[in-house]
Image (cartoon, rainbow, N blue to C red; front, side, top):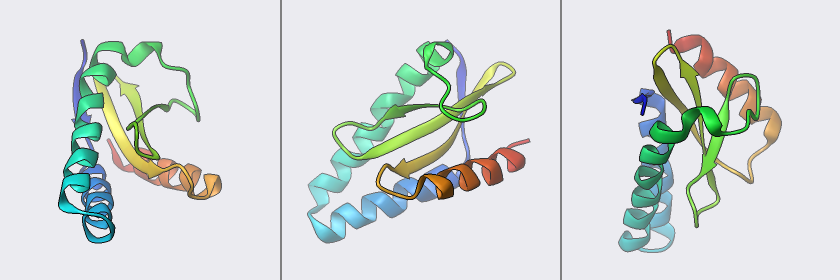
Length: 106
């Protein structure tokens, strides 16, 4: 099992999405969203090298049942969680955001 490093921006992504669910739906749905994200972290840590590469060195898992993907890559002995992304957003923006965050996770 590899150790996980979560970029600070990912916590911002999580807060933004959870806040949206809380405002539009209810507090419980926001909590379930955060729990769905957190429940994927052990899988990412345990099986990081087994996921298909999606873009460059990045793989992803989904925060089911929510329409969000968690993007990560292996860097040295770490798994770096780089992005939490709504799957309906523009794929070109996804690549730009991954590139920006990848350059900053030194």
